[in-house]
Image (cartoon, rainbow over the protein chains, first blue to last red):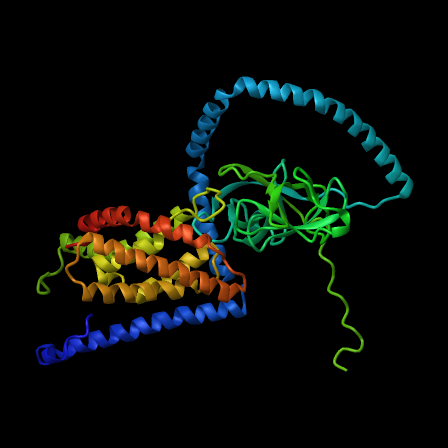
Length: 294
Length: 174
């Protein structure tokens, strides 16, 4: 493969020289092809959708099958972990239960009152909605993208844009679908933006991922006063993708001026997530303005 | 293999073995890709860039089986499997293969420490460049998160070299 030094050219056959030449041309072409691909994905980020879907379908089954022993090992580790501070935790939980019993009674009363008020106002809400529970079958722990692979795809009814959650809170949304696997963009990814409401004030904000463990809270209206540590953020339903009132994050501190929050849903490597239909059906495209094109 | 006599079944088997041998480097790269999607949720990419290490190792061990135009499809697959914009690894992997082949020719007899140091430089520049290319393709900066992966990749280098060298001796070398 090496370009032979000039003096020894005579001792190399023509064939050998040709081979070195072809190898150099081939290398240059490979490099060029890679750069062209890059330019194309800058122009159209969605290119190679089929290839990506195939890669998802190839990767997901492997981890779905190897899941069982790993989940068992994780369960054992969790049990051992829980054993050590069992007494403290029981006391804490009992105290919390007593507190929450009171809150639950208040909540039941409020729910009844809210239902009555809604009935008086004739509020229209979206009815029964499609949802599907799928297993997590991979993550992008080896890449800068913060995403999860789930073992369900187009065949199971998953579509790009659907919100994904677990019981505790919001996980993210579907961004790529294969036949039996899909990629879920997590809240912590830097391209994730979720419209939220601050529970204490009821005012809107945006929760943005920054590829770190914590999320940034942006666009808090200054008039509302600063957020406090412990403020809970739930989805506002703005934008129509995420259903309202799903817990998203809790404010844990400040990075300079900017509040940072910890996601409520802790992604356990081998659990299950629920995929739902988007909160509102996609709106039809707006009619072209009459004066378009002068 | 004699061309005069009709091929014996042993010969045929050997020939198939010979062909499969050529696929070992690509197969190991695909296995590393699956390993990379291990369901582990960490705030930064901590897993080493195993497909890159596999490509580097095969360029060193059997350059004829890992020329830059084989590194290209592996890069494309890496991009697809990890959810990176297509073209980032697809452009950088052939470049890395070309660089390693050139370095390998220049410093033919080198101790492993020098080998590791050169690999470290290469891996760091690879991650820096891929951060640039990602920013170029998506318009969003990936931040310093790829640096963590560079460190873990450098630390994983000796282990991967050890494992793949063993594999190469058993399966690939004649």
